[in-house]
Length: 180
Ligand SMILES: CC(C)(COP(=O)(O)OP(=O)(O)OC[C@H]1O[C@@H](n2cnc3c(N)ncnc32)[C@H](O)[C@@H]1OP(=O)(O)O)[C@@H](O)C(=O)NCCC(=O)NCCS
Image (tube, rainbow, N blue to C red; front, side, top):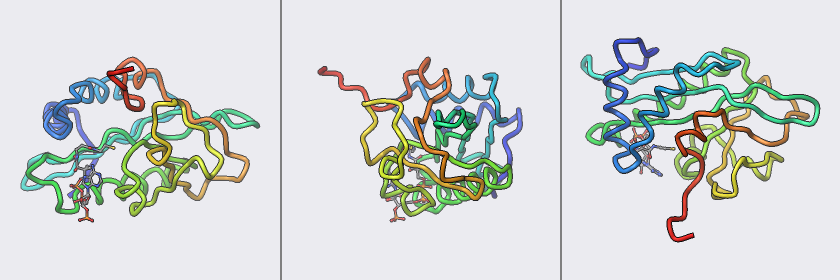
């Protein structure tokens, strides 16, 4: 079952990301910061529940597209996590689908993310660069920068995708090169 997160889920959601992302210990803190950040759009925070247990979580939070005509409020899908022992059962797929349905229902034109094109390419996302969108960081591999265009999207809505402050504060943009 996929449902909206409640305050009572915060501890379980933290656990989901701590275990799903393992080495990237910044992700649970990012989620907490995004929940409370002042933003133009209310975050969409969904949990997957199996036998009353929270086993997956996805967050959509407000970000911006710096388009030629004006700034457009868009959403970023990040993070998406499923407990390791529940992976490979379609839970991530259902969380992404519900997240996009919710964004569509709210009239949001675009949802951006960084991630595997193999995974997200089959789940409603396209490579953003060839569609005229600019990445917010040189550290994001070109193929990882993806976007879902929803029905409110209009052709003039191109430009640079701009992350909200918490993504920078938690250093959760792109990949770092420790040898650089
Ligand atoms: C990525 C993740 C959310 C997928 O959730 P899931 O419930 O296992 O996904 P589903 O069961 O819906 O889909 C499974 C498919 O995803 C693929 N997959 C899982 N992780 C992947 C990854 N990191 N990159 C590419 N493909 C991946 C599996 O190989 C499988 O492919 P198939 O359908 O062709 O067999 C989950 O593996 C996870 O939490 N990973 C750790 C955190 C993470 O990397 N999050 C994504 C950040 S953008």
